[in-house]
Image (cartoon, rainbow, N blue to C red):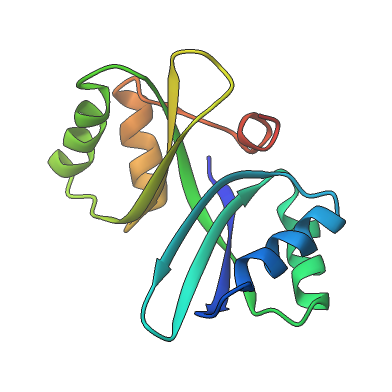
Length: 143
């Protein structure tokens, strides 16, 4: 089970994030999670939204460079040690994490982590077998 993440190339200049988020707002797209990785000249804005295909269309129409990437959404109890257990399962199975970001949902006591890993299918299988909740598209987009 994987979900779709938007990756948007962003010039590193004042107001650019406002412009991008305004495009999404005008299209009625709701942002679920967000991450920015930057250098001095540009950045990559990563978003989980409720309707990724529509978001891509709106952003492309606005002249932005955007792509979809498959990632894993992992749900864990929001308490010490739970994240560590999931990371240990991946490490013990030689699955490298390329990047990640986390957010708290409206559901009390839960934290969610978006992961991009070397082998998504293997990671999902291993995490499921170790009782780590993997969210479906409907679960994450419907939050």
